[in-house]
Length: 230
Image (cartoon, rainbow, N blue to C red; front, side, top):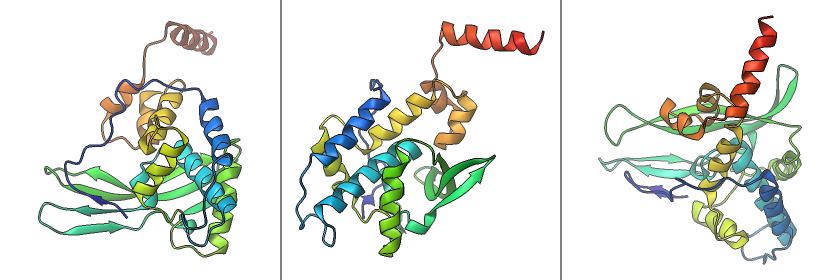
């Protein structure tokens, strides 16, 4: 569990270059090449730890959610009160259907800035991820094991341990890096309004930062509009 203090700074993604999706796939291959001892995660074999780590990478990327929303956190308010979030439970991830598309729906507790300085609103929302995504089997395999063992948390890890896992794979990545990459990839096809809804941004300006003008894209959309209005 991680303690979050008001005003804490996270590693910036400003100016961070985008990587191809194959980079994410290569990270999953690196997990298979990493050796884990029994003592790192009690109750999990090295093979099961690799399964969990690949599932975490996939969930961080496909959902574009923050690591503290997935593994849990303790938020300390300025008045000394604490709010605890244990993280996503296995039962918070369930299959559903959206317009004939099979999705894995995750219920997650999202922190949103309140109207007062340093205040937060705690909102339960859902994120849909396509079952047919090629990366999804890694997540479903781990989720099946977590449910069979009746884990209270889908990923019984601290945020610090999750950071160590990513750092061991590549020192140039960290947990929030996956959210940035996913939103960057989606910005090439989504409108700012769709991107804001997917990422759960509080402000439209944040979504607009990800969307860049593309002469080719504008021409393509123009051609599509011309077909509609013939």
